[in-house]
Length: 197
Image 1 (cartoon, rainbow, N blue to C red):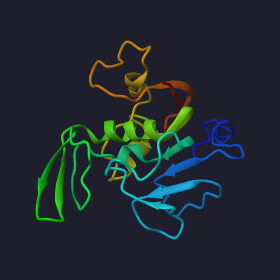
Image 2 (spheres, rainbow, N blue to C red):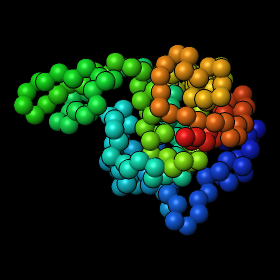
Image 3 (cartoon, one colour):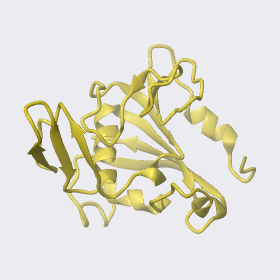
Image 4 (tube, helix red, strand yellow):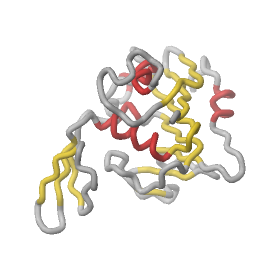
């Protein structure tokens, strides 16, 4: 564990009140009492077995007060394709090819990260928190895992802040987030973003 980070504050940000819901994306075999867990694998500990690269997610809009991504975002590819029986209804971000009467090939036309951010924005309640733990750029953890395929930088989320000069500069997005809190060390960073409408 990275001892240079404020884990007490991180735990406080993850606390939810009675009647609130929280989602852990990429929970794996982690037990998360009181949380909804989502993983691409259908495990005993998983509430929702779904690949986050397949949008839309089978989750209601404005449902969660907290969405947690611990060591997930650095695994998201720039582009991907998948075969499905249920292609996205909104095909503006995809090329969809019919393979046969029950199968479709879906090719992403935009960066997968942008669509994941859109989905997190969609399922968060207004004012809800998007919590991110990721390897610090240039730190040892960033290169330690061969499945890390994307560099995550804490400042990249300025592109989703409507009051920041970079907002809308590189891409169009419905998602809007404001920085709520962050902490960095040589190995990791922790980031809390608030959904704004």
